[in-house]
Image 1: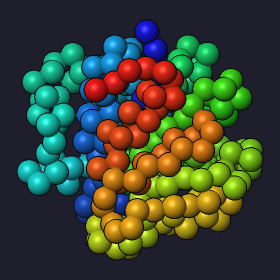
Image 2 (image 1 turned 90 degrees about the horizontal axis):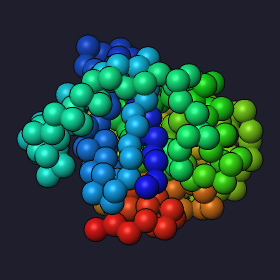
Image 3 (image 1 turned 90 degrees about the vertical axis):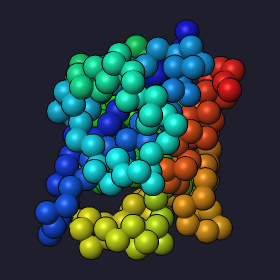
Length: 230
């Protein structure tokens, strides 16, 4: 049985607005059930531990996925998300891979979290894959600041500048993920049009561009681990 660590944001506030962000719920539930249905053991963690904030936009009807509905009836998964571990309570040695879902929150906390950055380096240095989707790749920023080779010349994706403009939140975030990844030396790629599924894999780094990429990114991670999935 493969053991996968899923790390979510703990951050809720956006800049210069009363609107809030947090975890984009479908980017958690889609991969979560991909992993569970493949027989994996999933452990949840976040910078502050406990229940992460959920981005209210992700709960709107047009963003509800089948996995969202499944989660609403899954008390075990709900309890797990309500009681995430803190990052200092987990170790790369205990897991086969790590996955970072998005929501704008990671731009604020995971991108600046040294414990998170060191965890990522531990996974990579142990030959274990690191996967992230949408704004989840912001977690790679601190790791790349600690070790520039993490992103230098690596083919990665994440929420694009065009998608930020269309999402109408680009004025309320400290930077765009695409620009920051490029500044750190990444070979950033994106889909032909915004909001279509797009994933990249470069060695141990597996990344997805946007919410529709969450499930495919999780499946790419399982394929890398040699796990059969639906």
